[in-house]
Amino acid sequence: MANIGITTTVPVEIILAAGNVPVDLNNVFITDKEANRLVEGAEDAGYPRNICGWIKGLYSVVVERGNIDTVLAVTQGDCSNTHALMETLQLVGVETIPFAYPFDRDYDLLKLQMDKLITALKTDWEQVMAVKKRLDGVRSKIAEMDRLTWQGNIVSGWDNHLFQVSCSDFNGNVNKFEQDIDQFLLKTKYANEFTEDIRLGYIGVPPIFNDLYGHFEKMGARVVFNEVQRQFAMPYQVEDLVEQYRLYTYPYGVFQRIEDIKREIEKRNLDGIVHYVQSFCFRQIEDMIFREKLDIPILTIEGDKPGKLDARTKLRMDSFLEMLR
Image (cartoon, rainbow, N blue to C red; front, side, top):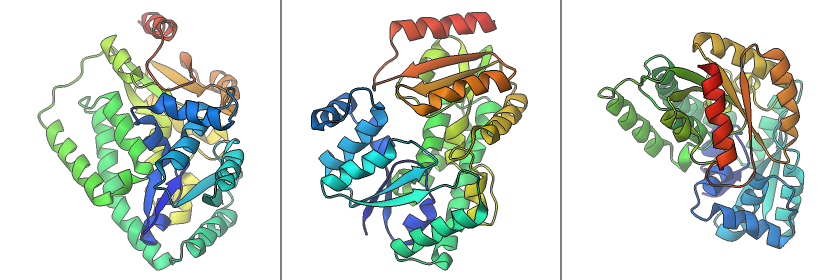
């Protein structure tokens, strides 16, 4: 059994079918009490200051923690800096496996990538599909938690974010993760409804700030749609595993994401959208497309290093809410 570090959501069914433990390096990094020091550690090793904080954090998690046996890196469909991340990890002796989502969502190319990963991890399709069936049950509970967020109004934006973003690796233990969601759903039976007057959608990569959701709720608003996090939870359940990862919107072009966002704006009765962008990330450019294609007020928030919101960003968030009101 090996710990396989992942740089974003990948076909986790294959990792689990091979008897390995998936570890989402992003989640390890952002929950570390010394997350800022991890960024600085990568800079001390030679990473430029004007490179995404997430990439630097991922590098330090692998190099400093020493419990990651192999890194499965997405070389197409996520972050363009992942190529250099792989090379710098190889430089210090870390084994890496590339995985690429085809930009045009080509079924055959995606299946080829999954076939190669199955071969590399020494498993087979029969075992992979057995794991998929197991995960489908867990993901259906996450879908119910999401419904209780926007329709039941008894789940906070933060809890919605946390459970869905954790579906990238199921916290390395599917059974324990399922117990956690079961207990959470049990508690919601006794939860009071939220009474906020502003319903928000959150689009873009998960935030590097740790108090964004709490600040919105303190100001009388709530995030009832987490776009990318929901995609990590595979919301479109289908029997074909390749098709499941074709329908997963994040790694492909922005326009399919926009169609998904439009549907959820209508269904969840959203008042506004918060678009989070990471400093030095190419996805910042997509903000102009969202503003052109989405007929809803949008607040764009930029983050660089881990920590709390700065005063200027809080002021912009508060002003946005007042404008919506």
